[in-house]
Image (tube, rainbow, N blue to C red):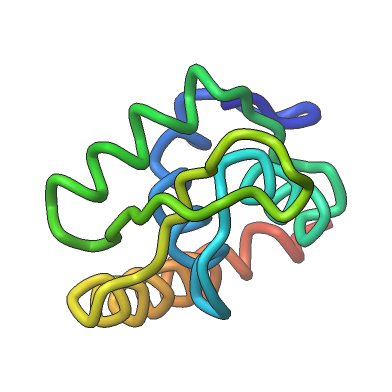
Length: 113
């Protein structure tokens, strides 16, 4: 995963959170997940399929998301759509609070001029 001007090691720990949050409002397929993350972060987070699919498979193995194949809405081959499981929603809630706590802890350092 890449970010505009940020350390890749720091961002790798954020990937699962971004993917879970992207699926919070409904099922999405791979390319749409990438686009959603790019759009919602103003292009700050940018990753390719080679990063996305191993992460999705890891989340699926942990039963945080589930995949189902659906016909393409554009007439192409079927697409695999991913959606949160109840366990995944609980994990998203936990990770969201963890991210908020992290941001609160950093705030004094970010505001120092």
